Length: 210
Picture 1 (cartoon, rainbow, N blue to C red):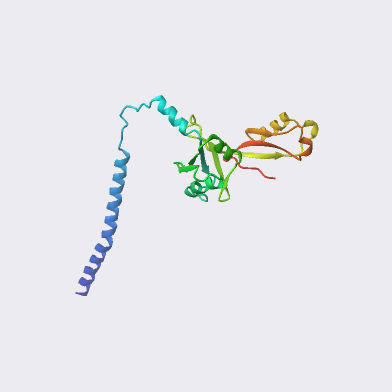
Picture 2 (tube, rainbow, N blue to C red):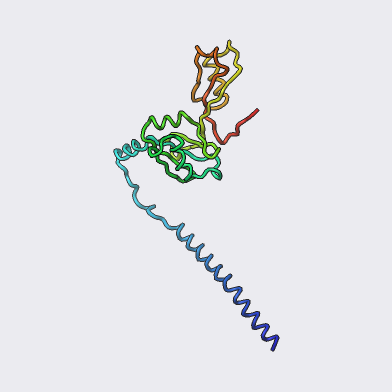
């Protein structure tokens, strides 16, 4: 009798233990089947393409011409929502500049004018939470946009005076990276200890320090 009771108790425990496991496995199977069915849904693939009139396209491009695209350099340390909320205030344009989050860990800011956009670009580069932000002007002919470059001003020191001209400075700048601008005043060169070049740094390439 004792052995029979033990077997009955063991059977009840086995059923009680295995039933949730079997139910869970069934749910997993159902979820996997549903996922496969959803992936196989083909919405509108056989429909004719939607033709957008040229004037609507031109208007859309005109309305979005003052747009700055961006992405964080360290996504784990730079929350996108915090970036969207904070940067217009950092730029002194709260209420004027509006941002939104895009796919692919990217974001964009919409500016009210060319002047306000250029002011932010000119005062860059910018950082958030002590980490750099990659910001570049939106190009309607670049889809998807390549957001990998940060403009940097680099000081160049020690060029002998007999070799100091714009061409030499530009050549040195291009050896560092894609050259954007040269800050060189021939009349002030004797009063400054360095000249500057602005380069476009690809964040996928490591910076070298001495």
